[in-house]
Image (cartoon, rainbow over all chains, first blue to last red; front, side, top):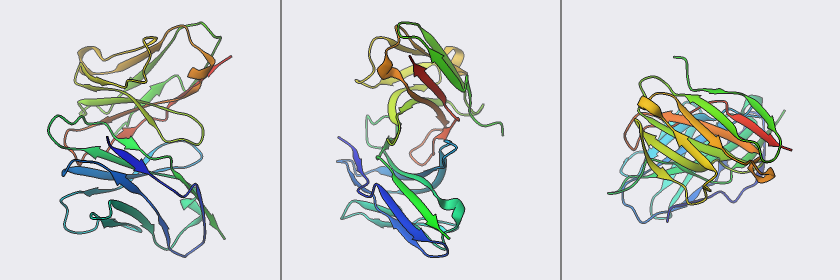
Length: 117
Length: 114
């Protein structure tokens, strides 16, 4: 069964520094996708970045990048040059893509990031 | 791009009452999802539609919960005989097909059962 684990309940980072949010996953499928979402205190879920299991390059999207280590089943989110507006809850999620798989995303428990001035 | 809209934003009800929530997905999205989120937790999958067909329901979803998506457009989620444990944020999301397609979420309906 697919599972997402985020072991950091909370993280602090100084403004303008980089921070890594950890995510490990468990799946028996060879084809799967990994997603990161941001949820500010206002509550909306904002899609940040996607990594496919067959993608050869680590995904990047502006200040967000994914440190994808397939053999270790980890997909850590790196936020560079942190800004105060990055303070939010961050969720890692996975979708399996093998035969018979559904389209749902399974989410981790999240990491609360606080950016300090 | 109007995004995913959910109505109402907040609902307070007494235990034992029925409630219904509505979700309007992004118009070109044929896939629609319902999730439930409690404080400090990640969204928990409830059910999934492809067009008008309900293709998956979570085993955690009791018989008091029912969802519909008539004509493959908007969707409703009904909770019958509400319990205090049903208090949560109910999130709707939609997406295109394909493994790479992200879910686009609405702002949710916050349910409080007193």
